[in-house]
Image (cartoon, rainbow, N blue to C red; front, side, top):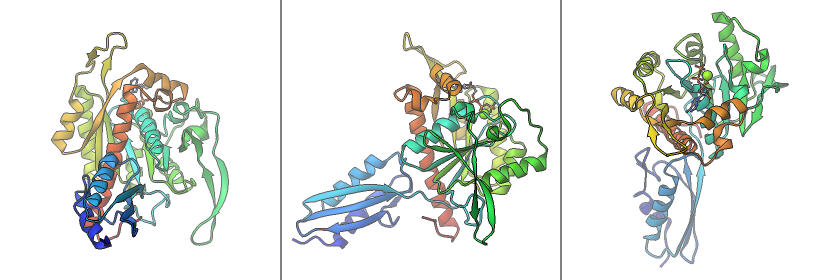
Length: 368
Ligand SMILES: Nc1ncnc2c1ncn2[C@@H]1O[C@H](COP(=O)(O)OP(=O)(O)OP(=O)(O)O)[C@@H](O)[C@H]1O
Ligand SMILES: [Mg+2]
């Protein structure tokens, strides 16, 4: 019996993307559907992120659904991804599909550590990722990535109006495109910033850096809700914010303040990450909740924000930060790295959900 395309599509309509809660056919995720005379069906599932946490499940659901169609003998499923975006084409950093700010109410909770390791985990999943160190007062990213001696090269590009503009080429390391004030001022030079200077520095980092095509630009912010945060959200439409906190009450109280600021500016909150959540003794394997536990999850529940996960306190995380070889590269099998990978997937899924719900709400189409 010949298999028709219609039969296969009917079967595929029973498979949902669990994050977007819509079937794969209506989501236009089925591509290159081919049906051979011998009952062999091949197709590509185009996900909204290569870091999709449910990739394996979707693949097996698709296989099972198509296999059930009468006459089908063999199913070949290719998994692809095309990261969605709701950033406007007229925005700065035109080739960047999503801008994700990493924020915290309090200093020293691990924003830079989380930014670096999540960015690398996203890149390892196959996404094109940039990391912008927007901690203009105290840039740590060059040290954490082992690129303190590097400097961005300059190039000249022609913009849409035919004007020549000088652009900086980001430094590349560990699969990331990186830009930091640290490259420009040197590590030990104190910089005293005034509001307008800071705004123009950030504007340059977004508009005069040749980021190329990026799926995700992770922006490591300074602590709190000061000028840098305000400038960023005024300069570009960011996809959303990830809030980092430690579990203890003070830090959690500070998260509340941060959340309220971003909410008042209509910036989506993509999720909360709880860092330094617990310590596992390398000797006994016993878990100790040094700063208490569950604080981040509580705040997430109260404000209805996704909880992306916990990261343990682990000496290799700090050593990775100091040595320029982040833990995700240096200790790929450690507990914290499993956590970083899961959090990166949850974050990527939240970005897809955010873009999807926004595109549904506003008539402008998803760029793909
Ligand atoms: N889970 C962890 N386990 C062990 N050390 C950690 C962990 N997270 C962060 N650190 C260490 O804690 C210190 C502070 O982290 P980090 O610089 O990432 O914080 P931050 O929030 O960016 O700080 P700031 O507010 O100053 O920008 C660093 O030395 C880092 O290596
Ligand atoms: Mg920092």
